[in-house]
Image (cartoon, rainbow, N blue to C red):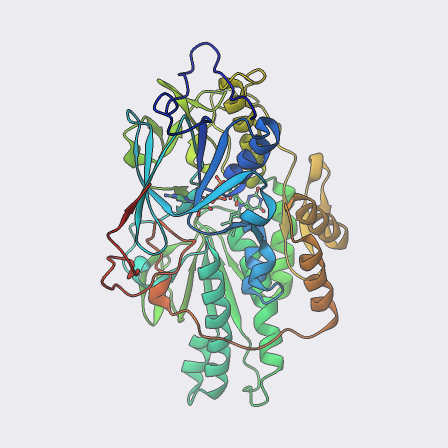
Length: 472
Ligand SMILES: Cc1cc2nc3c(=O)[nH]c(=O)nc-3n(C[C@H](O)[C@H](O)[C@H](O)COP(=O)(O)OP(=O)(O)OC[C@H]3O[C@@H](n4cnc5c(N)ncnc54)[C@H](O)[C@@H]3O)c2cc1C
């Protein structure tokens, strides 16, 4: 039998063994995004069977979010940007479910599985990596009429919705309806909104070319709004300039210093008084930490869990946190916290794994320190804006670097993604809407953007079957 590890200094001894219930210490990781996936991956390598690693996540896959706009634009099929957790994480036990509550004194995580059954996982070490959800602003009508962009259900819904709007616009009886249906308003010109508008315009132009009875002179209209004075406001100005040029060159109506005052089912009132008739308001104003974090009763900084540079939760030596959900001190910019990006989340996951192992007696604890490596923004076709290691790139070179970066950063499924890119370069996009998701299934105000809402049923809120049971 592999010996179990023993904890050094201030970290509590693994529990659960005196009564014979568990032979090995248990590490529970909540969330399998960039941070949680890397924590599990590196722990499984370093602990090598000397602790039980349990990964609690509502889905059985890791989602490579940066390629989500390409799913909506029909470039990539949805499964391409997922990576199977059981298929790629050896020695890690996946528990499907969503954490509802953490009992910090009793060292237990309570969760609900996809069928509504409740369960409990006791732990010796806990890593919280629950990520973030769409940010809401108190603007009338937005929660009811806008669609967020934080998970596969929303990306799939939008792909269908956009296709449907173009098909309905083609058959519309009057020009006003046609114009409104082929107007798409994206709010928030960060990397998500910018990529979505850039890809979306290309997608709808391609859809229109396939419509035999498309009214002459009508073109799909994409608007990209931001309160800032430039697109990609948080990024280097060279990236903003490149993106702005590509967007405008493609015909996207870029409106900086502009926001939404009110949203209605038939349109959007802008803060400059203009009313834009549209059936499509896409909300990309940013993210906020998963609300689950604020419910823990631990100190937070703008909704993110306060942690030390070693990613430990102060006062709880058995709890660690990383990724979007954690306020990690940025040692490269004293006084600031690391931004909510995949680049940081994945690297923090690796450090969390190292420090969890150290807390169990294997190796030394290290602080998290990472210099930004630059950013890559895919603008569709062969175009992108990128500044890897500070080198400013645009056009096809940036496009190649961006795609290469994504392939290198994905923990799996690279061949399938590359194959879809090749197919997209050679073949026209499929103009088909499957209609599997409806707008009420992808509400903007949700703590679970990774799951589509399903009708309420006997199992409870989520309409799940077999609710009410309890399991360990
Ligand atoms: C469309 C889009 C494009 C992006 N593009 C880029 C980019 O190009 N470059 C970049 O650096 N960053 C990008 N980002 C940001 C980046 O994706 C995030 O910073 C990153 O995903 C954060 O990683 P994380 O592990 O903290 O959270 P996530 O990746 O969001 O993972 C959180 C995980 O926790 C799970 N979870 C949530 N709540 C619970 C619960 N209660 N119980 C159990 N599990 C739970 C979720 O299902 C999910 O699997 C993009 C984000 C979006 C939305």
